Amino acid sequence: MRWHKTILSMLQQRQGKKVALAVDTSTNEVPTILINNIVKLFEQVKPDALLVQADFKIRSVEPVKSDTIKYYTHGKASYTLVLEWAAEEKIDTLFYITDVTGYFAEDMNNVDYEMFWLVPDDFLPRVPFGKAIKVA
Image 1 (cartoon, rainbow, N blue to C red):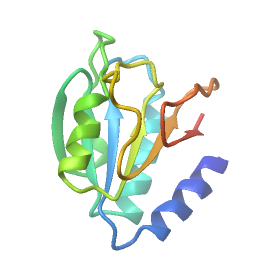
Image 2: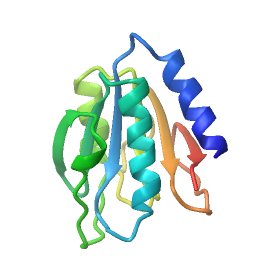
Image 3: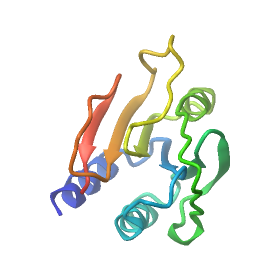
Image 4: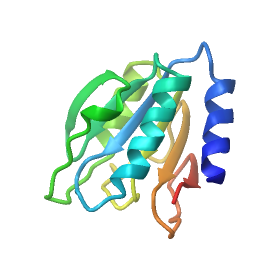
């Protein structure tokens, strides 16, 4: 549970900042208990954070709440819309729970905000920008 202390510290350092947590909902073959625990941590420590549920499109944007996540089974994920949304909303820090196997726009090679990829898997892939954190 090292990830727990890491994320807790990161959230505490970002009080007063605009924070969003995105969840890749493109598959239901994910560790839902782990993901719910991460969302609950955000709910307790940073209740003003926004929860973005997305697969190939943004499904919802609402205050962070762990019992609202709906997963799909098609397996298609694109990060572009969420990353663009975060820029438009002037998000300071975006955390994205995903296996990082989705689509990126080819011309997107950086973002103007802090970006953390929370990977709920034993394999930690390379990310195009930001920092990947293994939360498995």
